[in-house]
Length: 168
Image (cartoon, rainbow, N blue to C red; front, side, top):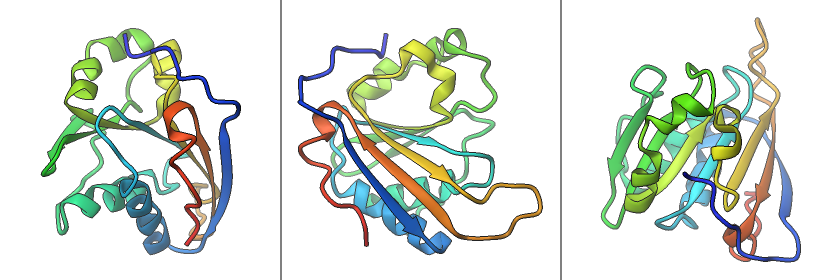
């Protein structure tokens, strides 16, 4: 199971960042990528169209410039081999709950590298306690074209001492 004991740190880290474009969302993904290590989990939450895949694209392209990074909505898991470790980009939107997640082999993917998980709420108790949560607010509403987003960054466990300031 993915849920693991979390290292003991006094508090979680929280930061809120205001973004004004898809380019800024991708750049935030690249800044997180600079801190990413094997064994890490990054979650992406927000409504449809909020920018989760744009963030993921920025993160992955930090390691693999020019890489095509589609949403893995239908494949569920897309793995990218970087020079040092694999990044598994996971989209759980179509899953019903934690039982379905167990069949994806995410434990093995985490052993090989890092996980980038869209729609983490589908994991329930299977979600690793040691993670970086990216919660995107704004946009995604039907008919709304506004690029303004508030991104809440919550570091838990091993992410706390190394996340630092992620604003531009």
